[in-house]
Image 1 (cartoon, one colour):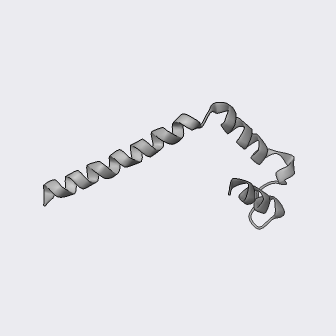
Image 2 (tube, rainbow, N blue to C red):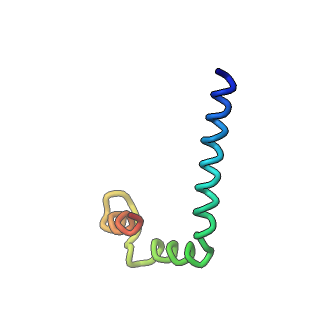
Length: 62
């Protein structure tokens, strides 16, 4: 039983690492900078909770 649990845990951990590696390969510094620049721009009107700017930022992220 312990062996089965260890094998399942190992499989789950391996899957998470594969997903991270896959996404890390497509995220570049330039792309990240572009996204963060947009979120920090004046057009987003700040991101305080329940404000139009917060709603714009949430829509952009989705």
